[in-house]
Length: 156
Image (cartoon, one colour):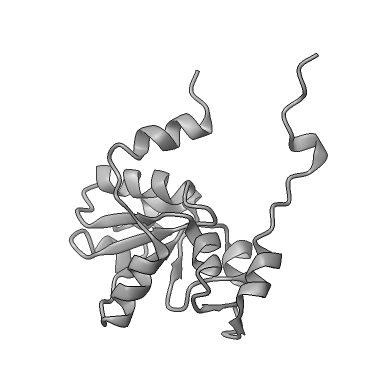
């Protein structure tokens, strides 16, 4: 049986990752990839890369295709355009980029370390109101929130 990390590791054999500083440099040079954040809406609203769009992972495939309620025209029309997929830590984005690659997207990469790495690199972030957030805000908003009952039981 494969676990989540196994699925991510397998997808990484097919998906290219870029580091936050590579994306920062590309944006500073005027490149305009689609910044696709696949986190849930509540995560996206609290903290995001400026200019990114939100398509939660659960509706990604339909959002990438025409003729669905979830269709995002910017994605459906962009099979050849550079797309950087973003999540919190870089794992959901790898799975999403792999699925997009399977759907025919030819220039899709995952942001390694996700929004956490972007924040650690002290790059610009905003919230749903367009307010600028700093790295300290990012530390608080991106802190792990694993509850006690979510931890794997200890072996006795």
